[in-house]
Image 1 (cartoon, rainbow, N blue to C red):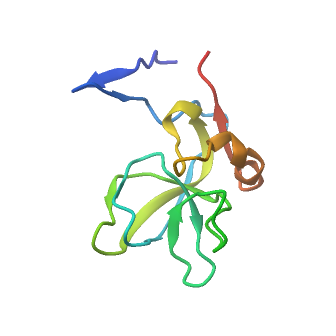
Image 2: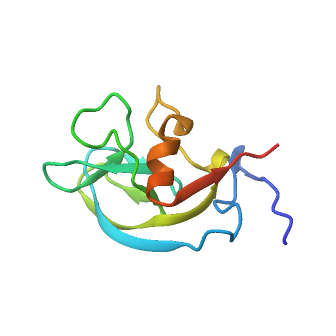
Length: 124
């Protein structure tokens, strides 16, 4: 197995997204809701019930996006409009590469993610 190291680009730490191949990766696509700014690869998203658009998971939300469903596979800019994107709906990811809304933590959504076959490992 390759030895993946954290890479530092202009003082931003970049972590490889994947944590192994024990769980095969499966993708899907959908619409990421407008007005969230730039979302990076590794964002954990939930689906808004009303319009089926995806938003950054926030455990305090009440619109459906409080439930983690997918991991964003690419950087998208939603500042001005909704964007079509590709998501991972199954796989094994590095915990340090995943993120949710400020004030929330990925680990709070572990059971939701496991229910849809998304798992993570923590670096030790």
